Image (cartoon, rainbow, N blue to C red; front, side, top):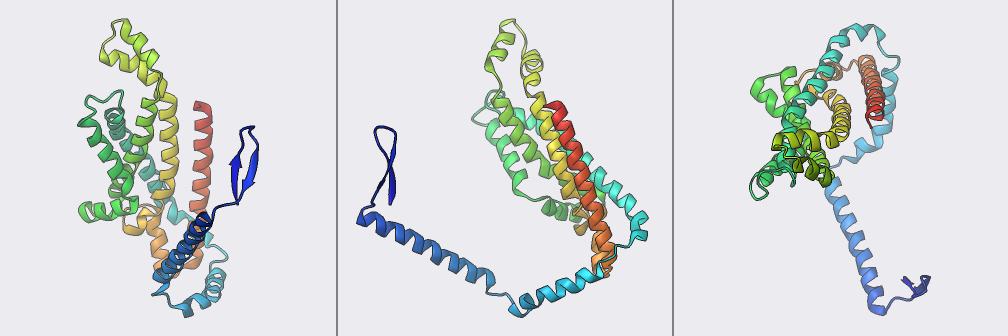
Length: 272
């Protein structure tokens, strides 16, 4: 049955034609067949004995993770500080790079819609297409392990996020304010400073704080690939099967993310 809107605004049921019914059933059949095919592809290498035994293994590991090893807490203070530095410095570096890229990508501020804008958008898309973990893997191979690789990985990942949202905010500004400033004889930099920047500052501040909050989460796992931070301690604890330490690290990560979420929410509320 299909729904049809009448001239008086009411809706009425209308029976589908035979062809529409067949097409509907064929669409459902194709969807089911595609789902079955995808399931077979995803599970062709699955060892189901491990799957059936997973609840037992999970219960065993869960029992070993309790209680947390609180005495290990002093050992993760410096890695936690490194994680916060990776997220903060990576976000600041991304802001300095993404702001000019955003102005080059916006239609109403780019010097060339035909050439400069596509290049700027390509940079934004390239940054958003590669995960921070992949950036970290590449940078650890180039720069060696450490927080420098983590900072640059976070920055390269954040450029696309900040640049995209910021250039969309630039394109949505009120053109009348720009025209009013230009009509006074203001130069290009003056128009930018007094007509465009004041309109995008709330959006810019909110985007930056939001990205910093996301980077706190992402930086906690970069240590798994050698990019510094608390992830290094997590990896070493997992490799040595020190499950009480793993529990403590996970609790610390959870607490850090919750606090960063609260801080970013308060800042965004104060700004917006």
